[in-house]
Length: 200
Image (cartoon, rainbow, N blue to C red; front, side):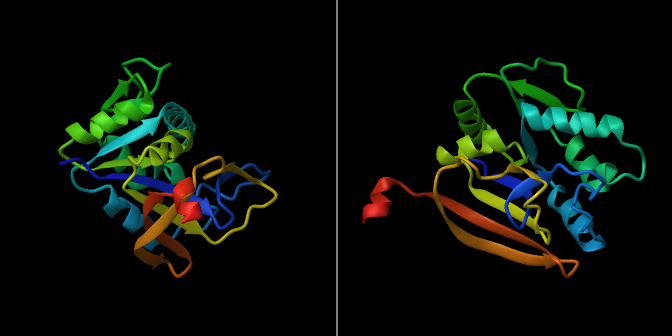
């Protein structure tokens, strides 16, 4: 039996994974609250493994190095995520990594993660890692897409459009919840749409 693979992403309402603006909205666009942070902590509880692309890994390392106690980068769920066994899919990085329990996996990313899914006895979760996860979705490897929608529109400042260049998918809603009365988490099962779907 293969492990469940979850693509976990933060998004503005207009589909951006982050923003590039003067000033500081903060990592959650300034909309984090106790319920969201508690839920994120619980989501990283229990046995599971993280899968990161090289770019997201580098961004995490850089953010953590520049942070200090009390920053939202150091929220308890981030520390818990960082303590999980982690695979970094990369053709450029080499072991050892600046991460407590991380292993570099080389080779073709789709084949590598497909094999990892087959061999893993616990669920796999990937936060961010947009290029990697778009390719994995197209290959049918992603079982769940977990989108946390923050109540902001960043049309002028948004960067990293999450699904730009992705394939087409139908989404089956599996779970939904509102956190702190303003942030929505949606969990979907993706199904790739092919040209046959379009004409049938």
